Length: 199
Ligand SMILES: [Zn+2]
Image 1 (tube, rainbow, N blue to C red):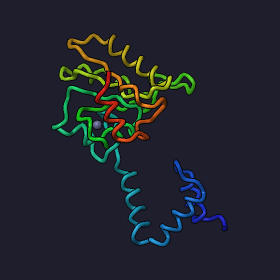
Image 2: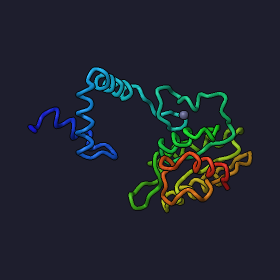
Image 3: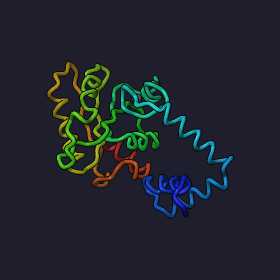
């Protein structure tokens, strides 16, 4: 096939996570068969989301509204903040419906190997949130990898250093979360159990 927009589109799909050349070709052929019903609405929706989605100023979630729907929900508890590495982790926990508190998305993990320091993560903005008197517990829902654990230690140290006029418990997800397991890959039951039996 000659190089051109069609070939380019297939290449764009094949660069997406989890897709290779073969699936990219299948997707593009499917879209071309369903041009009016799927392809055009999909392209329009992608453009709209690309233009309108925002990073929540409070927690770091991605949503069409600012602050995000989770932060705006007055029915959610204000006394717990669950700290996660990525938005995908937040969405995985939300999917289970087993947590009704607040979130804080770090945007990654500390990594000596990849040269990622505290300044590159959304850590500084967590401290003032925890100062709020209603906060009683910070749940560090980070992976059991070296990076996950050093990030958890760093945050726990920062929170301990911060002179607080009210006690805050710092808890971790229970073991049972696989080593290096991103929450997104776990089934709902495992996430729910890990959250309920936090220590
Ligand atoms: Zn938010």
